[in-house]
Length: 117
Length: 109
Image (cartoon, rainbow over all chains, first blue to last red; front, side, top):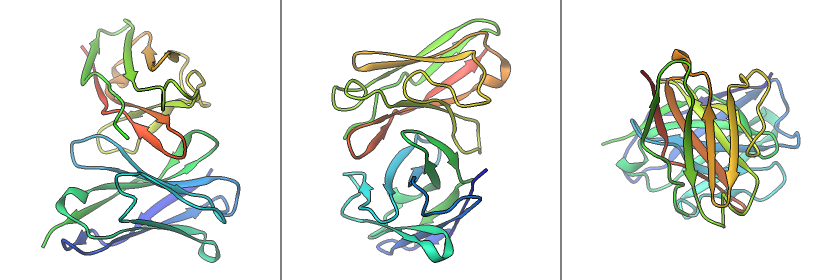
């Protein structure tokens, strides 16, 4: 059973870059799956941020595309998210997940990131 | 892309059935048979309940079922149980990206 664990700063300053990493265990990041990020502002719904396929081009939410960068680190079996020019609206719980075909069955526990001075 | 439309709330008594709708467009729900439903309890990560419109992952009770007609997908929970009280989100493939619904809070009265 794959396990995913998000890590990164819990506090980011406005206009700074939000950077998170998702460590994958129990599966290889190079396996034939997409790896994705989803966020959830406190008390609100889920928002798809994007997905990345090792060796392929990532897909991003069009509303975030100009600020998002995703990458895969095969040597450390992990993938990452960077969100530039952060604002308070980016305050959310960020989840990493594994997409097995056209479904997301495995999720990390989530990490709360607050954007504040 | 716009979020899929779900009713904010739904409710039912134990043992009853409840159906939650998820309306999109021909560019997402109506265009692909890749609609998923997630259950989320407070403080927990989402849990996949239905994928590819009608399929249930291993371990999900058969009380949960999915369907789709045109641009609207539906999740039906039969034989409601107290533990079904949670937030439910639909999600649809939209061609190189995914879109979620706004979520429905299901109350078991």
